[in-house]
Each structure stands twice: as C-alpha cells, then as structure tokens.
Length: 179
Image 1 (tube, rainbow, N blue to C red):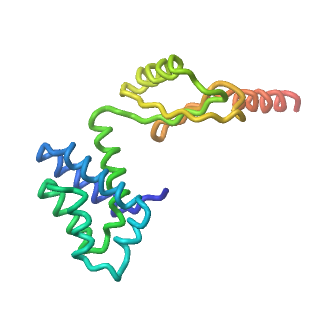
Image 2: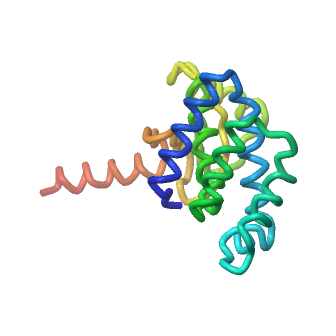
Image 3: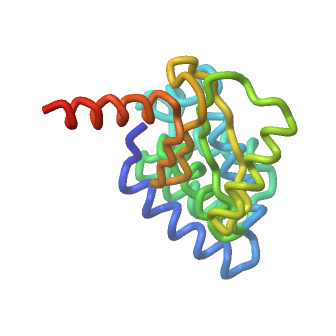
C-alpha cells in the first residue's frame, strides 16, 4: 500500500512527542485502537463522510480512546478538523515501525517451499537476528515455486537463497559459457 506522505510526517511528529513525554506505549495502544476501529466495516466510510458532523466523528474517537493522553487527543482533533482522520491507520502503522526501530526489532517476511516447523522457525529467527543485530520477528509464507531454500525480506534488504534463483543463475552461467 502506498502511504500518504502526510501520514509519515504526522507519525514522525507523534512519535517524537510521545517519546519526549514517556508515553510511547499509551500512544501506540491508542493509535492501534483507532486504526482497528477504522478498519471495521463502515469505520472508514463514517470518518470520510461529509454528512457526518465533526462532533460525531470526535465522539467516536473519544469512545475508542477512553481517557487518551492529552497530546494524543490533540492529534486526533487536529486530524478531525482537517478532515484527515482517514490517515490514522497509516499513522498507526508508521508509529509502530518507529517504535520497533527504537526497540531494535525488525520484521522479516520469509518465503519457503515447504512449511517450517517451530524449531526451524526459531532457528531462522536466531540466525536473522545474528545477521542484523536486531531482534527479528519472522512471518513465514509458503511458495512451492521457489523449489527449496528461502527468500527473506527484512525492510529493504532481500536475501534470496532459493533453489529456483540458484538454478536460474546456473542456467545463465551455462548459457554464457556455450557462446
């Protein structure tokens, strides 16, 4: 999903404010709750509707948050006033990414040809953690087309150790030597 640049800026500012006030967890919890509310059926349509009064939108956000940190509530009211409440899921996602970076946590998407068992999954997490110097959380997917090995993406880094890629490289190498 393409992220609106404004969401990135709001998340960055929110993160810095939350860190300054020692409220990272409270902000993260609140932003995630708001994002979940907007992901629910009708949630996004409600906040984007021109027919729904601003007060009703703020009331929904207040019910979701309960007693939010005052500065978090200021962010929500600012977004509501500017008609940008729809950015909350993107802001929450980026805020979580910043929080994970702060904590030294990386997320990896790993594709294997066959499902990994728990032992293999844990070993892969340890290996990737050693490689990156961060605690790596692995989300595994299965794609039989890679034939064997694995393909891992950690942020912008791609590690392709699939049998399919190795076979294609060998094929190119052999085709080159035949010429």
